[in-house]
Length: 322
Image 1 (cartoon, rainbow, N blue to C red):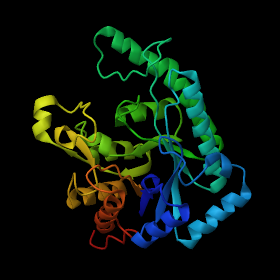
Image 2 (cartoon, one colour; image 1 turned 90 degrees about the vertical axis):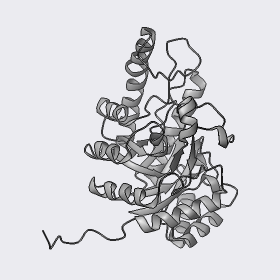
Image 3 (cartoon, helix red, strand yellow; image 1 turned 60 degrees about the vertical axis):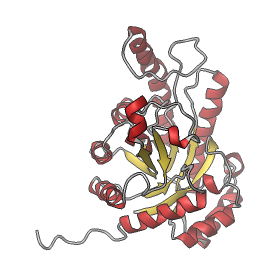
């Protein structure tokens, strides 16, 4: 199992500087933004696509710092009701898959996207309850008429390129929890799986190791984001976990994204790593820094410190005692 980092927080550095810094930290893998909200701070997707020289130079740089690419990231909304926005997101995702194929990278991370609640609407609509009845009807429309046709076609594109698509379960997206992720996978193909990010599941009350076991039984974990969340119970008791307070108003938030170890202790993360191994996941733990209480560098360094003691560096030995 590798320690990885999503390099977006290091976007103010050149790719060479970012790789050198991460290599010195003992990081094994990088997840590179190539579009959407992660941006293209280190990799210009279209500049690298079909450019053998640029791709060779990237390979040389990775070799120099003993790094590998765990995934290309392009988180956006390909189901957006505004056609131009949806088309841009779709193009980014398809080109990311093509570039991953050319680079020998087996995974692209993304969101499921979120449609409108009905034809003609202009705003994505996150449905969280089946009543009043029009919400159930809207949810059915989103899945049957928009999401499944789109993702079935996208999954065929991914399969043609031999690339897995790892969807991050994220509130305000159609797929935000494990049963929804599995439903989309079953409606498409096995190229569709999870970019398992526990930070969005903690505050929903989802048990992380149970969710890992559930998706692991279906071999549906393609990538893993290492990001923590702290739930502040005093605020939850007053207003619950559906919190529209801005992220930088930390004292009034019901929950905050935190650096690894600041939402859950080291023993919890060792349990997470152990459960991932139980279900056969041996890929990267890609650290995503979004902790507003510390700097990117400090957050990354503290996360590496905790996870370096949690990950297993060897294959399981013979159970001679069994």
